Image (cartoon, rainbow, N blue to C red; front, top):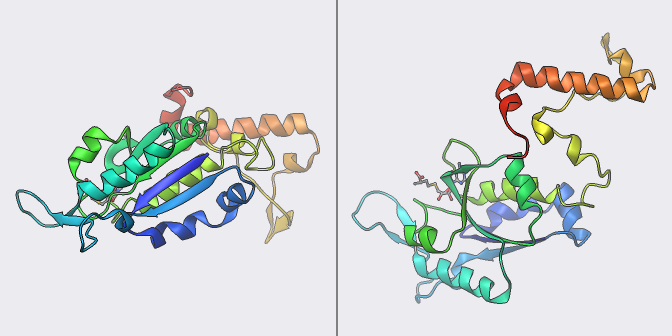
Length: 229
Ligand code: SAH
């Protein structure tokens, strides 16, 4: 999978995508993330990427020309499955969306900044708008990092234990069961006996029951959702 990220703040996104599982995916050649500095596509001599809003009001707006040029340049080189704009008014990101996007080959993520991008870009070039939550960030960079991380870890082969990603929370609309490691007892706090029984059938059953219980208690609405939607 290849993800092209277009941003006015490349530094903001480099670090979250240079470590841990995402880094491993890149090292293994399973994912490629190319970060584009929007300033490189600026069309005027001042290299400007923002301008005052028509109609007045506080805050700058990302200019249409550099964004258009960046996206069109990329589209000439390959077909993109989705051109995503990060936006607080987009569709809320969830595990189902991550699963879907992880099956694609080429994605563009455009990070908004300032008051956002000139709306004509959203009307004519963007194919999907994603919000990572009902709050406002300073820019789309952290949202792009969240989206990229969530989808890259799902690409087959990225996580060495193939089943690991499938047993995370939200797969099948269930929260993950509790996990423990050594020591067996700490300050008198004990690991559930069953996990040390060696009876894998019983352990699986216990984990499933815990998942169900935690979901019922913490996120009951997940149980009403269709996992394939
Ligand atoms: N004026 C806009 C917010 C601008 S915030 C509004 O009220 O909708 C600047 C940029 O940060 C946005 O363009 C968007 O790309 C990004 N952003 C902010 N909050 C976000 C969120 N919850 N999810 C995804 N992107 C977000």
